[in-house]
Structures are given as C-alpha cells and as structure tokens.
Length: 124
Image (cartoon, rainbow, N blue to C red):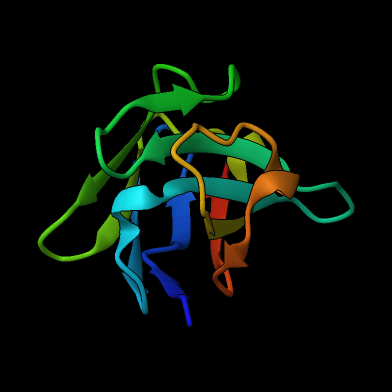
C-alpha cells in the first residue's frame, strides 16, 4: 500500500520561499512518476510539477517554471518541492501524488496515489 505524507506548508509573505516534503512508503518507487498538484479554494486541481523517480527527468507547469524545483532523495524515499519567489496566487492545498508509470504525468487526473495535502498560504 503506497503512503504519501506531505509536510512543510505554512504562511509566507510574497517573495518568500518554502520547501515541501513528501515521505513515500509502501513500494519501490523506481518505476513510478511522482508529482505535485495544488488546489485553491473553489478551483479545480492544477498540475504543478512532475519527476520520473528513476532518472530524475522533470516537467513544470508554465505558472511555476523558473520559481519551483521538484526533486527526490532516493535514500530517504522523499519527494521535494522547493518554492521560491512565491506569489499570492500560489496559495493552495498542495498534494503529493504518485503514478505507476515511467512517463512524466502532466495531468492531475493521471495519478494513482495521493497524500492528504499541505496548505501553503502566501500573503501580499
């Protein structure tokens, strides 16, 4: 059973930084694609970033490209999202997600497993 547990969310001023973590367990993730998806109040889930666990290839939504960095630590089985130059429009519940696929998953509906989410609030 795959378990994903996010942490690292919080309240930050515009222009600030946060690093989200996602502790993954229950499987060997070498054949998985992982991602971060966010959902703002009253809006649909929005893809943020994805990474192929085994090779480290990444993909970003245009809205975060150049500001966010997705990475993983194989030894710790942990996924990260470094968020810099945060904007109020980045405010959302951020989910860690996993897909049993060796391809980058750019659609939030393509993921098989989800964490419970961690709240990020950016004040202006």
